[in-house]
Image (cartoon, rainbow, N blue to C red; front, top):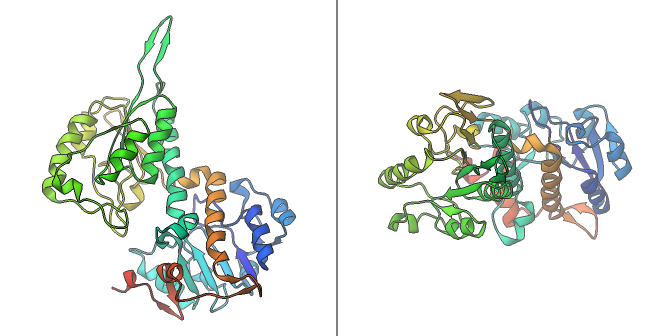
Length: 376
């Protein structure tokens, strides 16, 4: 059995799909591992470290993929990249398939079985494979660090002989994995933190981190969560009431971090141009949903925009900004999934196509797009 780990070619992508630690584990499962030269450099992993773990370093992605049973990726491969892998091999990564049907069809045309790790069901068995959580956790942390870098004042209250420095006021919109980590990080830095979310269960989680919960808590709010724990789209009436509450609150904040995403849909608009205009000059907004259209009016993908002295941070691929940490967690997510595809007694690949994890994540097989969510 062979695993290929090619260099990621997406501009600005510093993550890698395997680490020396997971290479050792793959070797123990019976795999040979081929890593393209330089694949781990931006994650602070040298070729020598991969070799010491038992991997073979090869010059090109084509060499890595030749004869591979599994190709591990961070980003969705292009059709050309997928075509480097043998027909019938497995390509596993974050495929971002929604809205990219042509790109997914190109992967299907390569006749590989492609798995989207972001489709992993949120069940107990799959927690260790949950790439959305592992990467969102780091994005929430980095959002606060990016905010602090743009905010030209201190976060904590400081009582000195020369006077008192007031604590920064941080408002986190969306209390999922990224939001909760943002709350925790801002609290560690000494900020006064408030947060909002449309899911009732978030209130207790926010409070447990020492932040104050802000929301219109009416009957619709109490029913605003799916059985899988995701936020439901809210009615226009509720959105108007919530927007009014947020508008009054947001103008008093120094930093706002938005994290709201609905799977398979554009990001909901949470902060209007009027709300941005109401904030004090020097305030900072960080939009973690900018790749899906953004939560903040005026956010520009890949840039720090400025509107009347208010900065709007719209960095892309925020987990990739701390690639060494992100790769460490992502590689473990991939290993945990691959482990379920192997017969450990015979040390052979043995995919159970009826396994719930396989069925939930399989996007292409035998030249076709097979995932139900992508059929239309």
